[in-house]
Length: 118
Image (cartoon, rainbow, N blue to C red):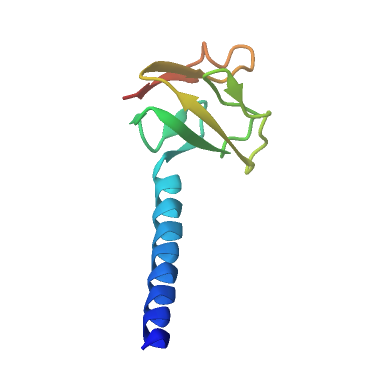
């Protein structure tokens, strides 16, 4: 009888531990929104125009023949050549953020926009 009780306790603890690990892993992923940014023809295309405030990961790919970067909330990618992808994560508060290409003249040519953290 003691063996059965011990086995039940061990299985219960193992199940709770496994559930906790899975629940926390899902929670961590759920707390980081991912926004894909494509650069092409002197234009940014974002997969989302807004995301919940908190951690947001920007994955930036340059498909243009000219080098560009992407800057938002004080962080930016290095200059990206055609075909390069770089990413960074920022923590955003509830508000609108301006994003730009910092290469001289590029923002004036239209490489800018706004992103809203809700």
